[in-house]
Image (cartoon, rainbow, N blue to C red; front, side):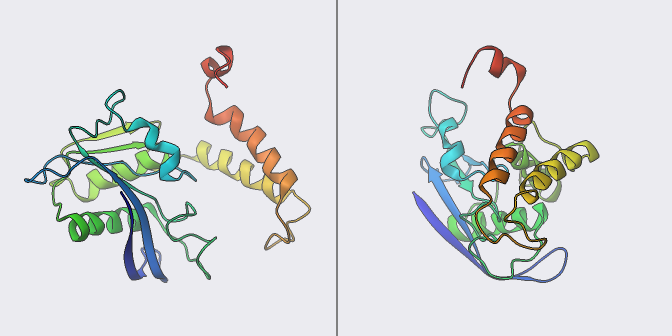
Length: 206
């Protein structure tokens, strides 16, 4: 099932407040009577739950016939509170995301203990934060292609992607005056070389 957790007025780690904060989520499977079969599966950079839910099936690694799986959409992904749907959007961190995910699990589902947090990329960064912040409550984490902090090399890559977008004529130095079509195509070309492996291209898996 899909739903929305209303966080309210949210004071942020770096200062400021995210007003009317909300987390869009989707669940799979059934919560056990003892509430001890919970997997949290945070979204990765820019992904919606619909982009990553393919992994939730008895044939893949997250089995909804055994576990209660919750995908919380991270702040800024376009479904939960984001610059695209919230005016005067402030700076949010992984800490802000995970603190509210923990609150959502407790308040919506009465869940205190997490069997597993599974994440890829920025979802993996959230998994690390779950373990660091709530070690007594998280039994295990699975980290795929993730790091606890963004490395300088990764930062340079991300700045390159952003610069490609800002090279579009629609960027006026502070905002976009139209959809940056050429910038988005350039960003996609750059990301295709970074996000996917040599094996992906060798096997023509596109």
